Length: 361
Image 1 (cartoon, rainbow, N blue to C red):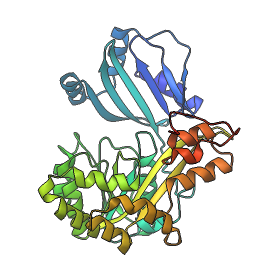
Image 2: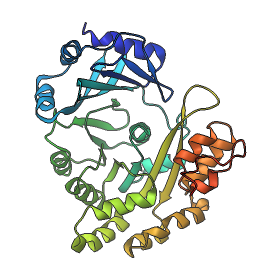
Image 3: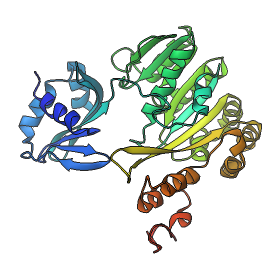
Image 4: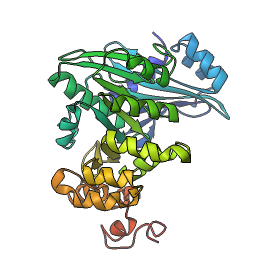
């Protein structure tokens, strides 16, 4: 048994989400959003280097040695799956392991808006789930794919780096491809997918201009495309997609995006204040005709106002969802302030004092 499994079993026993192994430091787990040491001696660089190399494929070790970091998936039968990142830092080699639950949680279990079930059933278009690293984007997408898998009779292809949640074919044929193992790149897999008769394509992350362009093309040509971006609001997501292209093509991209976009789900994850666990707050932009017009006319600065006015259509603003979590006692005023878009709205809550003066200017 690889020695790393001792640490991973401890992580699972404690109910943690992440394991951090760092040269010169104690092993640490993330428990309900906070880092907690495991109470062991600091890791000796040579020992950690040997320990980590036991579970990585040779091609991943070569990539790590060439680039200084690498991602891959690791599974322990009967225990669970993990998303793994190795990286080099000033003291030596380090690693981060993220727990990937063996069972895909349902949208109801995740407290996701019911309209996400409708989005998973769309015949075509682009649906984006965005947010900072660690905000639960992959889990939300996995739940949407699982809903489609149960209620549709179609072909789903996922392109991931690495594969996280493993989907068994139910109503749909689900085929999962991992970058580096099954395909050279997101771009190569997307180009291939257009010839593989898919109905739904999951792109783990739209990292660059070519991947975004291919995802838009797939959405325009009759496929439902689900993907992620590291943006913190719906309006900024639209801007990010457009700004990645040269100025002389942005008009064309705005037109293409206005036609293909169906929704942007932007989420942040909070440590719960009322009990152990975490809870998400979601902003939801739906591409109704008024939204399409604003994108086409380069008036994305008006999107937040349109979200506010679109509640009857199912839209929701992030700050209002954060306020609901705060009012219900699920999160602290300090956490609400840290994640809010309008800092002044949350600057005087809780005990009445002005919190976070650097946020409230």
